[in-house]
Image (cartoon, rainbow, N blue to C red; front, side, top):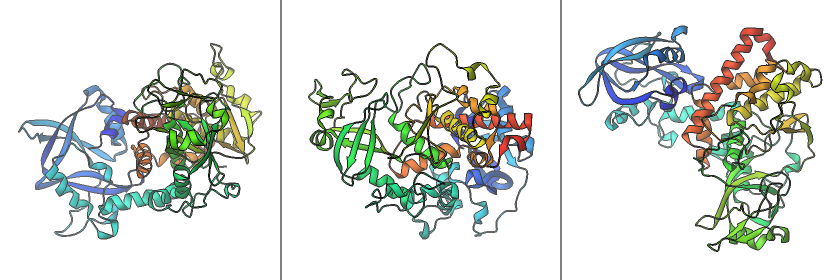
Length: 509
């Protein structure tokens, strides 16, 4: 039933109709961590019926669906069945059943936790009355606040895992943000850039989003317009204003266009899901031009503000590429939306990336020399190279091809300036992955984290996390693109393992 999953390997698949399969029942078996629940199957059962979604796929592409369903591994067995549409038309359809079947539950017996399904199975193509009946499978309970137990337990499982520990309280608690920003100098440990337990992440995001602004100034460093917000508690934020609507597609070079404010926030959630803890907290925030900016603007900022033809106060700011004719103006409510990013008052060591672009027609050495990694390994430590490969994977998922330098603190690369992602969902610029496919090595810990995110759960988790903050960070096309790119990362790692063996590729460090 899951649209996004069928489109992972079959992007041209078209939904045809809901249909009923008679003589079978719906069942769930074998808990799958990446799905946060048991996998679905059908079982022969006279007198029962199963509703499902019928998709049209080119016959020559059918092998892709078989591979995705693990037919070669004997996870699922393909069978042909006759299904009937609501209009009474019969069709021969290909479906899949698990190779291992469990006995039918007794009358009134509750589905055990290990066999409760992932909430991702329920989608809009099914008839409403069937969905109501099917929801009984999920078994409601007052302890879950009205949510089906399966959904509650799946989400709780996601949040209780160490991988998501940094975000658990963002979604469930983390409401007390008072004073949380006062002791930022005490945050950094050898494991992370900011605290990620005991309610801190949720408190930090809420403080960034809601704290009163005392002063607004230009942030002139860099090529893009951004503001520096001084909060009443003396903490600072960078504010990158919205330049594009979410559905705007950036054409041209991978580094083309303005920074995307949503990319900064998306990057923060992505880093948390990947367990990359060296990134500045970021959240969507709206500031009112007349209440939050004009009366609190410095003289320098005032000089970069002007009135539009409609009478609105607009800002063009001060930066390398800032121009008077390229302003940011408030919306009809007088607000400017943007990414509020916690300012990190740290002394970072800045290095040029070995895999940086020339930004001209000239090619860099890494673009022409497939053995370039040998040169890099002669000058950088294994830890630093693995760190650069982690960053490359991160950048590839959002298509940030503009990381020409990197900042280091406590011997860890800090993920700063992530605004060039989410440009074109149809493009996968593979050379961003050059550190991975040229070096053919990867941190074992990173690989284990990546393996948890198959089957569409990467994008689904980011949507879940952002949704609790009330934010929509990307279009459906961008979410699908992230899952698609993850498959290419899997393929690259498997290629390396096939060539060199897992012990040489996956590094314990």
